[in-house]
Length: 309
Image 1 (spheres, rainbow, N blue to C red):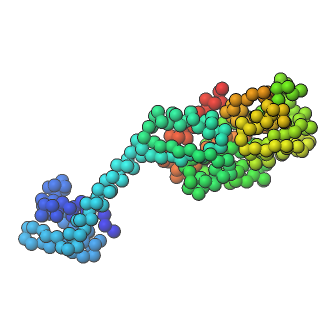
Image 2: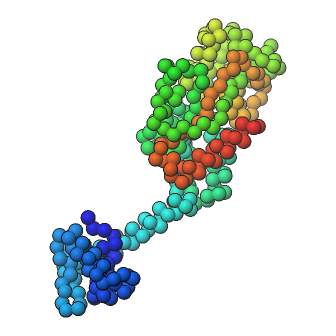
Image 3: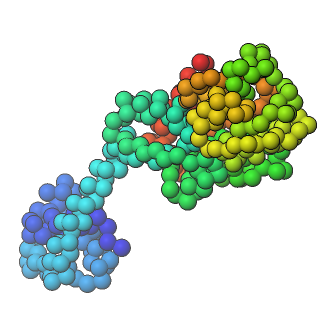
């Protein structure tokens, strides 16, 4: 294998015409130059220099190697500078994927802080719900994933989306997001301090994303009834709009409600309490990348601020 340090010595010898002059230019001893040239010729498998007295003349192979050495060393220098910039957070890229209510609440605060502190770091954002976001992380399509899991899922039934197969990932808990009930302003339970899920047994329901819909059914069945789901949509503003129009009731995470202007809707606490854990996920190797680690830290700070509101 040809080493960069040997190429630097070869260029110095070719430029100065002797081992001793090359040693002076490189700031080392003449024997050190001689040893490195021998090592380079062994790696190349052919003579690179013809020694004529005190001067050195390049062979055809030596001439070719010197010609390529310029580009190789220039590229290596550029690579070293780029890596140093990334390590020092003067450059770099982070690909973030988040579920919608996270990308409208936690993500903007975190990314604004990253831009202020590390303007050379580029961060991209796409939206995906778990388990798709977790799949994207494992497939190399992102560096960080905001995801969530419901605490009521029994460990035996937990799957990839619920954290049952997150053991290979770095899991950074951010906050606990409580689900709240949504009823139309004129509803009989509007203004109630707390509402039991069983009190909503006869209501038409507006359901959210597939995972949230599955969890809604589990919670309702735990309260002794199966919800009659009249409408289902992944769009949180649409859920709020349907409830506000008097077409049904819903439960949504507080983060989702915070991100929507709720008109004609009253929020009520539901019992039993239903919570989901919001986390940031990454791969162990990626967690050591400075830009990824810095973004994780800013997401934690954003979550801490959101939890105190």
